[in-house]
Amino acid sequence: MPITKKFCGTRGRMTESLEFKRVLHDLERRYLSPDAQAKIYRYLATEEVPLEVTERAILEAVALGRLKNAAADASLFDFLVDALLDDCSFEIPETASERLYPSSCTLC
Image (cartoon, rainbow, N blue to C red; front, top):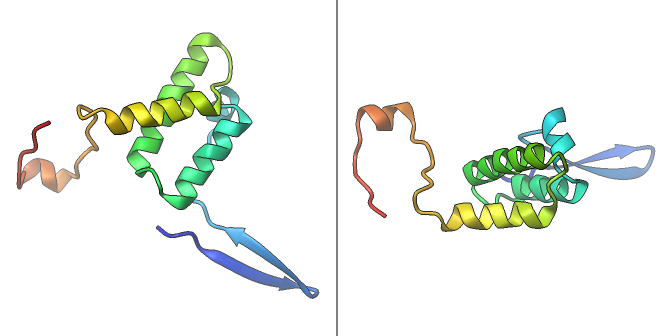
């Protein structure tokens, strides 16, 4: 989904707003540093990283943050994204119709 920009005129001022598809949960915000959160929102807005990879990296970063009882920073989040993009065993879940009617088989 592309970024949708809306310009609203309020008393002669122009404001720009962006629509996001997802907002981080309180628990996710607790275990992700502000710079990691900014990076996540950028990835979600620009779609430069597939949504499934971003979601999986969020889960992994929050799990690591909970284990060490500290917020995961942006560099750790980047390492997780890179690892998931390089990992050929990480599969993006298929739709229900693809499970019922597999059209092809991919091998790493």
